[in-house]
Structure formats: structure tokens, C-alpha cells
Amino acid sequence: MVETATSPVSHRVRVALLDRIVRGEWAPGTPLPSEAALCREFDTSRGTVRRALAGLRADGVVVGGRGRPPVVGKVVPAQSLDTLRSFTEWARSEGRVPGQRTLVLDRRSADSATAGLLGLDEGATVVALVRVRTLENVPVMLERSTFVPEVGRHLFGFDTDTGSVFAELARQGVALTSARHTIDAVGANRLDSEALRVPMGAPLLRERRRSSDATGRAVEVADDRFRPEQFSFRIDNAAG
Amino acid sequence: MVETATSPVSHRVRVALLDRIVRGEWAPGTPLPSEAALCREFDTSRGTVRRALAGLRADGVVVGGRGRPPVVGKVVPAQSLDTLRSFTEWARSEGRVPGQRTLVLDRRSADSATAGLLGLDEGATVVALVRVRTLENVPVMLERSTFVPEVGRHLFGFDTDTGSVFAELARQGVALTSARHTIDAVGANRLDSEALRVPMGAPLLRERRRSSDATGRAVEVADDRFRPEQFSFRIDNAAG
Image (cartoon, rainbow over all chains, first blue to last red; front, side, top):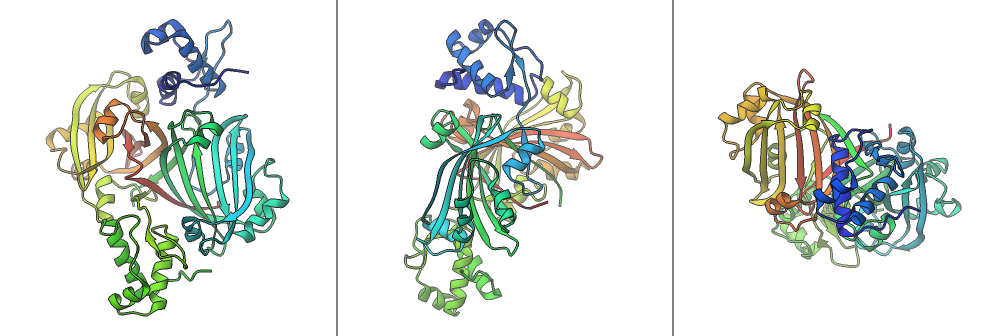
């Protein structure tokens, strides 16, 4: 098992190297500088540099090692927002292997913000789902979804560890056909930190979403938090 | 199910209330006036007021349900990415007051990543512009733009502290008509931290952009970093 625990310094080194890779400054196949050179550049110890490199290797961003010089691997995948697609569907279209691990699936009382967004009374029962989403078994996103009860009830007859909730709901006759996305950034809280294996406060890309069914009724609100080293959104647009 | 259909009158009430919230007249957490008071103020029926409030609740601008007094939620302005618009144009459309302060305007040699994105040889001359962008004089975004020289040269005859570069370029006959945006999150570096008055490492929303002119030629690459408390992106989409 690769050591991926991150100190703040090794995280900083990791993010700095990743930035060069993501920007294309270091193209796929480029050999990384030697550990000694990285120690000098970042004025830090060999152990710290090794932890940073181990993290990049665990992310699949750096490949090679053990006797062979590490080289830059593939770059961060970007999800287009031109159409509404599930994480699973998007990942497969990119040739990636999506996965998920359920942390929470329960019925609970809606807080006022969630109730308002779903058009329910405060305290109404909703179905909450929290899952870690992975690509090739690497944690990429922590998903927190809340469904109106008529839709969420379908999840209790489904193994939420096995695949796409959107696809399962479609099989149950509930198609999520449109969504409004609000995208910003947030520092990792304790749960984010543990689930995504990043330090507390590390910058995460956040997508909040309200999804509606074919009648235009809001049926899901979600808060998805992504590791930016692992995921970005892409939008193409033109002057109106 | 809350009735959210809007009549012209309820829409007028909703917009009037939203205006007070967005302008900060009613801060987050402020209880709204009673329905009876709103009926008197807008000289309308309780049903109309309720429809206006339901619309604000659906937008997340007002929180709290029917049993508890509704209060103002947290409102962060969101820029739609449905069309390509400048920060200045977007801010004005929201009734906000955009501003800018230039930190850097110079000619420099393109690094390999920038040169690649602009279709130039490494080391070719480009024009770099770094500005702090503000809303009502509050720093909201740090903009780093790099232009191909034939376009960037127009900026030396323009006071970049006075307004929109996009609008100035359009006056010079260079219309930026399409763009690809890559959106993620990043921790504030030293310059971000100083310009945006946030701690080092604070999570920022990052938009990287490659803008093209009407012939499809890439003429600008940019890295814009936003304070997430001050700004978000909004995207509406539908299943393909």
C-alpha cells in the first residue's frame, strides 16, 4: 500500500507539481526532476518529497518508479456541463472506471434550506445519501444527495454501492431531466478530509445541484465536492 | 407542493424583495416582514405574497418554512456560463458596480504552456495583464490574462484601470466570440492572498479560459481566481 498520508508541506509540494502537469508545462511522458532537485527547489526533506510523489503516483498522475525514473502520466479529466450526465456515465465515456462507497443512506427531517429548495415544508421527511465516488479506486468526489421521499424510497431497494443512482431511478421510471448547477470552491471539512484523503481546509471544487424531473418538479438537491487534482468542469460557450 | 407559478404581481413583489436582499439592505439572517405587512406594503393579496415568497425560497434566497418565520439566506452572486460575457458586463446586468485595479501590464516571453495554448512558439512575445476585480470596491477576483501580441498591443493605448478589456478590444475590432472554460479550485498563493485579502491556502474558485476570435484563432488565455464567498458560476443543463 502506497503511503498517501499528507503533511501540509508534502501536500503543498504535491499540488505545485500537479499544477505544472495540469497546465501542460510537463507533458505526459516527461521525466520528473530527481528527488534531490525537488528537495532543493522546495527547500524540504527527501521524506516530504517522497510523500508528495507517492501521492501523485497514487493519483495516477505520475507513473513509473522503483528503479525507473518517474514520468508524468495522464492529465486531470474534465466533465463537460453541456449536458446533464451522471458521474458514472461521464466516467465511462472517458474510459475511466467509476466506483462508489456508501457512507450514509437514511430518512431524515429536511432542514429549512433543503426543504425550501425541494418545495417541501421544513421538517418533512427526505432521503439522504452520502457516497465517496472513485475513479480506478482513487477517491475523487464526496457526494451528498437529498431526495424527495417519493423518489428517494427507490434507493432502499437498491445497493447504492453498485452503481449509478441516476440510472437506477431511470429504471424505476424517475428520469432526472434537467438541473441547475452552482459551482464554487470550499475548504475540506472533517468528513471531506477523511473521505477524500486531503488535509482539513484543502481547496475542493464544489458543485451544488438542483435536479428536476420531466414535469419540472425539483426532486434532488446535491452537494458534490471534488478533489481538484482529480477533476474539473469544462464549459464551451460563445458570445450571446 | 408549494405553488411557485408566478403572476406578474407576485413576480414584481419577488423582484422587489430580491433587490433588497442582493443590495444588502436585508442581511443574511434578517427575518422578513410578516405576510400581513407585505400585503399592506405591496397592496396585494396574501396569495400573491405567498407565491413571491415561495419563489424566493425555491431560489434559496429565503430560508425557513411555514411554521417558522422566513429569514434571508446567504446570497452569493452567480454568473451564468450560458453565454460568454465579460466580468464587467455580467456585473452590470446584476445591478452591481464592477471595478478593477491593474497590477501588471507588460510584454514578456511566453512560457511553453502558454505558448502551446496560444499556438505560438515558446519564447514568443505575449502581453500579460494582471488585475484585481472588484464589486462595490470589494476584491472578488484576481485576473491573469495573456494575449497574443497583435491583440494585446491594443491594451497599451487603453487605461486598464477604467473598465472592460473585452469591450475595449471590441472597439478595436477584435471580438472574443467563443471560449473554453476549465473550472476547478485552488489554494490562494501569495499574490492571490494579498490581492484578494484572504489567508494563504484559502480555497478559491478558479476559471481557466482560452478565448478565440471570430476566425476561431485562440487570442487569450486566462486564469481567473474568485473568492467563493463573493462569486459562483451557474449552469443550467438538461439530459442529452
